[in-house]
Length: 97
Image (cartoon, rainbow, N blue to C red; front, side, top):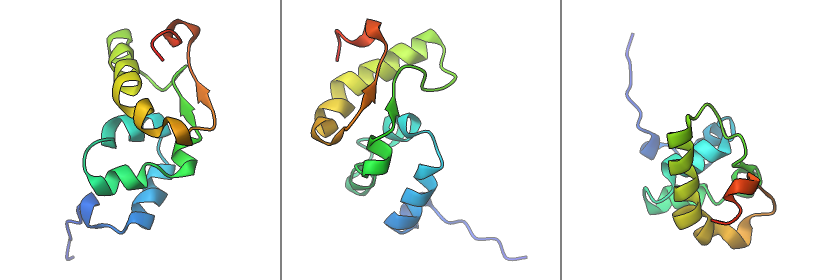
């Protein structure tokens, strides 16, 4: 069997977006935002941005959750705030946002 090693960067944008749509959008935004220009364009897709949930974004322990909230508040949200139709956050995080 001939195995190939395809990198995520080598995939077309529409295929990457299809993959990202199967993942938790909060994780995709947190992990890929700022990585490079192509990823920044793909993660601005309305499907991913329309499902941002910072109330219960996954199995994060409290220190990871604080880092996630900090990164969203300081870097991610300011750059996509005009595209976000709905944002779910904890009331304790509202002050930072």
